[in-house]
Length: 93
Image (cartoon, rainbow, N blue to C red; front, side):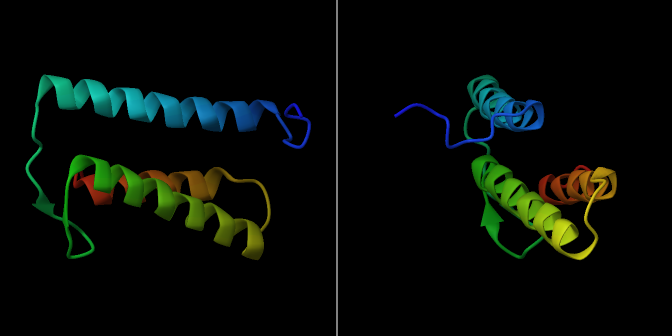
């Protein structure tokens, strides 16, 4: 079958590499500091590190899709918004 159905461009490859790096970083973080007790997050939910990663990635996807639907390209502004979103979800701000 192959992967000809997927548009494997540079940005697509970078996106999947980023996801793999996020998962690897979370694995290392969990190995160095096991447990990661649940915290009360920005959405009013008790979340673990993995939950917060999932919420930040899902929210970022919606930010980009909304931006593309409403504004089009370039995508630097939604990237900044998505980074701020992820920082808020992880409470680093």
